[in-house]
Length: 106
Ligand code: HEC
Image (spheres, rainbow, N blue to C red):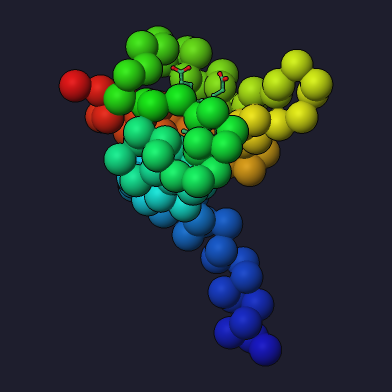
């Protein structure tokens, strides 16, 4: 039981240390690729259905990318097209994504 308590106590620390080395590609693969595809071109069934943007064609500036990730996007009837990730991703993960999303551009 003592060791268990210690692990719990150390967890927040370990978590924040880990966040320093966030890999934007890993976060993208987990949360974004289902719609935007591993290559960012949104040629996935969900991406086509929802009309996800081809990120290699995107010209959004950093601040707009961040906004899109945090706030998501709703259609005119108010249902989600892209879900909001505010509260689901850490600040460091969002920052890593902003950098990673731009690597699709060429
Ligand atoms: C459920 C599907 C879905 C998921 C998951 C998703 N997106 Fe999207 N994304 C969309 C759709 C749909 C749009 C187009 C919205 C619109 O009409 O502007 C979009 C648009 C964007 C845009 C704007 C591109 C532009 O030029 O307008 C960015 C940037 C983006 N997504 C990044 C992400 C990132 C990063 C993630 C992961 C955290 C993510 N998306 C997860 C569906 C999704």
